[in-house]
Amino acid sequence: MLGLIEKLFGADTAKPGLPAGFAENQVAAAALLVEAALSDGDFGAAERQVIAGILGRHFDLPPNLADRLLEKAEAAARDAVEWHGFTRAVKEATSHAERVGLIELLWEVALADEELHDYEASLIRRLCGLLYVSGRESAEARNRARERLDLPPPAAQ
Image 1 (cartoon, rainbow, N blue to C red):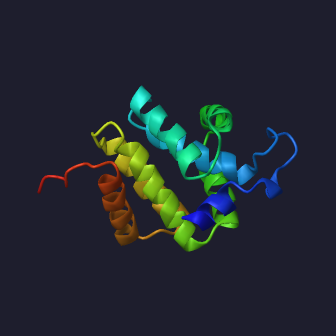
Image 2 (image 1 turned 135 degrees about the vertical axis):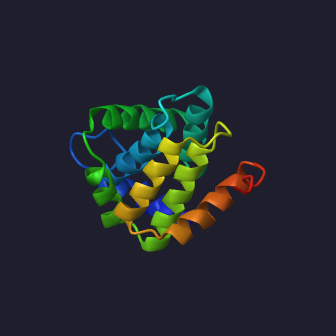
């Protein structure tokens, strides 16, 4: 996970026009987390808190920078017409294992309100395809996210 932190949120790749300290891949990864939260039509306090916690905890950002990155990600997600730019930035900056780690973080956001909506699951499946993460890797990442959130296993279908 440390590699994901360093590559997704390394300050050495900042581009002109982005807030100081944020790189294109940082905003892209955070925007994908926001997209996961928005996909069920309800970006509530629980999901916002989880994203802020992810940005702060996993990416070693102080609260003020985590909040700035979350604001930038919300604006990027709101302005985006597709996810390919976000996934391209992430793919170019990370290894396969780090992309699996991002999928795990997406599952954490989707499960934050303890209810998995079909739109959230669909979004993550599509992002897995764009990030070249297998269904099995995604399922394992989802299980790790459930454990981290202390959620019971899903009911058998």
